[in-house]
Image (cartoon, rainbow, N blue to C red; front, side):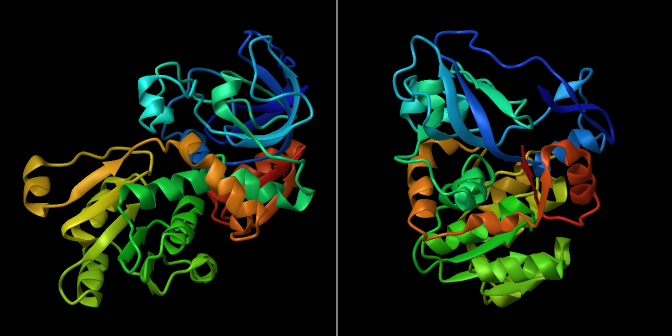
Length: 338
């Protein structure tokens, strides 16, 4: 089998790797129907996150079960499944409280940018569909594995309610699907902060009512002005930089909520700033497994079409171009087909 390996900044290779196999009784091996490049993959690709030698890449996946370990009961060969970027047994105390991405047996998935994938803790990690879905639904189902589940968590963590005013900081795939999530949760006004016309159009298609192009202090001032000097009820932080985090906090009304899901890089919050901000903060690695059944149903019944975030489709062996296109902002998100 060949798969994606990151050797260093800008150095992505598609090369021979060992075929995945059942290593533990709780494992499954799936044949990938679709995978993709994630915005978080760009951090090590740009050299902003260190890696320890050549690193297999990919954590978003859906496909058909090929083989299961002897202890697996909830999925079987031939079923189409979607799994989270974080494995979970779905039975530990953290899982039972809805935080499967902090399962006490968690592993973060890698190696999904390949034709085949071993999934640990298959019973708790994988969610099967009733039937094998049409191939054209694979992109939208793939989003539930991470970017839609993460955007949904941002909205949930920020306590988005029907009739509320929501600001989304970040116009990558997660930010755009956070807009979609807020819309599904009934937000009345959704303000997308974006400087990119193509992404602004998709944000509006997903439910944004307003677009703000300013950033930093200017962006905060614009949001405060648009909300009659009060700020937004809920702000969804989908970037992970110090600037985006403080922008989110300062856009929020007193007593409002920030849902933060951008993987943090260099974010440090001052206690005094938080003390006087008077906002709720909640976030972290999205517990995608909590939401997978609901999100899969929304895709299968045609309520949502989150697969529109994929604006570049490539064969898997051209994965390096997929990274380049996203790094250069020529693509929002790259879909890879084996």
